[in-house]
Length: 64
Ligand code: FES
Image (cartoon, rainbow, N blue to C red; front, side):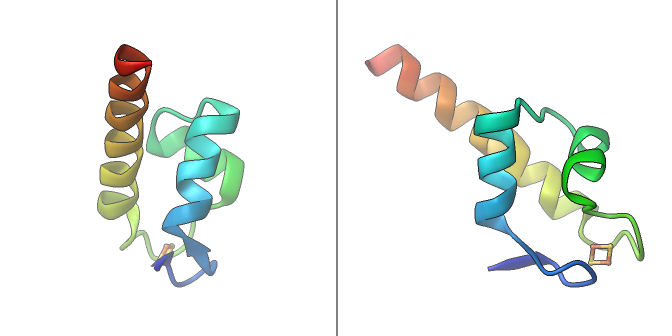
C-alpha cells in the first residue's frame, strides 16, 4: 500500500530500506527515500512500519 502519497512510496519500499540499508528512524528514511519531505502526513505511519520491521527482524533472528 502507498504510505507516502506525495512521493508514491509504499510500505514494501520502507521495509526494504530498513532491512537492506539499516534505516532506523524517520530522519534516515527521509534521507533515503524522501518520505515525509513534503506534507509530512505519512511520518507517523512510516515510523510505525520502521518499528514493526525492526521488531519482526529481531524475532526472526531469535528463531533462526
Ligand atoms: Fe508523505 Fe505527503 S504523504 S510527504
